[in-house]
Length: 615
Image (cartoon, rainbow, N blue to C red; front, side):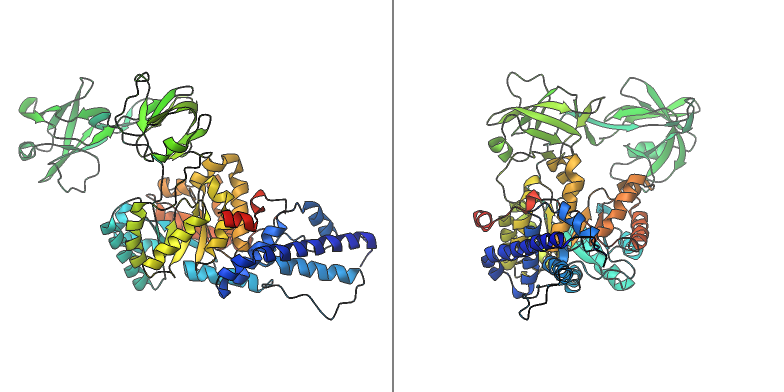
């Protein structure tokens, strides 16, 4: 061994590594009470998490560089076996220093380089099911509503490579959930492919209320080329109200008398909302509907007059039936003032001339303070709270698109600096949990903020005789991230358990510029706790919706190889997206195994037994 380091430098490294080892053991001793409450099976995982937290209380980047210069491990890949990694480097340093091994060797680490990853792999197997051959990362897919009616869609998803099916309790009903799960079980049996079912509880999602301003209207457009020539006319279906047709196009309800009289080649004239006449050329005739084309765009409202014309003569006339309600969203620009109200249809005196919209959680008005930020619609609109009153608050729009942004009903609201003081489970969640506990393999706990949320879910599952049901903790708020180590300590009493990095809300809560950093920290902490991770939100979203991925999202999907599962959301091309992701993960597995990390000091690692007791 060349003399790259002096004995003094090696001695200093020995001293620093020994101090790190002692801090790991001290952290374990501090949390002895928490360790005793965990089942013997999970104690090694909790001890390893505590060792890793002790390690990440320090900035070790300089130490890493000096270790690497000596050809030793830089401690950048010891998440799953922290103490064993430190002790391995210590043993080599002692050998370089000429120390003779003592007969009383220190107590061996609870997990080592082989058993640490093996525990994580076992936990992943138990929670998410087996990974397919050649791919260690599972693929999860969120079920669209049509999966309740289409068995073939579910079967295609499994055959394309789906390993876990996700149902969102915020959408559909028990009837649709039962049908989707039945399709999954049937497809799993027919294809021979195991597939777990995850059901996400909706949680206390803060959203905008209903907007009752709008019209009962149908709008159609035509396709034009660069010169303005119509290249794809609009396709409009005229049919009896509630008629079950498979014809693609915009639907206008008409009386049965028109459908009895109409013939191919006729023209149906309809009055546009702008006072213009639109000529619909009849190209197909069926018993309960006819198909028309139109080479002009149109807006048609309920009760609009129509007339049937044949060979230039009016044959019949009448009115369009009832059309679906289309809300007119609020149009907001930077510097506008928005009134957020507790109740729908409330107009605040003195502000009647500015936009109003309600929100779904009254707690927002009790806990918010002037000066705090507020975001709408997945962060598309950023505001600053000006005033908070008992039944409303005033918000100044700080950022919106240059043309202005539209804000509709049921859009997400984020208050990243506001502690709403609510638990992760609502009354609806407890009702839904009856169905989930009886039918699903895994339950997802949305908007986890603190250890108490985990304890409450555990009690609810125990009351239903389902203590062993798999649990996914969805980290999607700033408080949820800040409390993550303590939440993990509480969660290790529940088995099996995993973490979902819900990057949509999380990005808004911690700031888009911090998202990459935060998701890395969650990956490290989860590996240290031997908890499988689900990489979620907008993975290959453009591909799933349009059939063509963007370059950036392909790279993002490839980085999912560092997790144990990657989640895709629904879209028209979701089966193609699963096949594409399956191919990417197969290829990336030959290049990546988790990731070497640089060990700067982590604020999230600064936990104490006192903070655990307080929580």
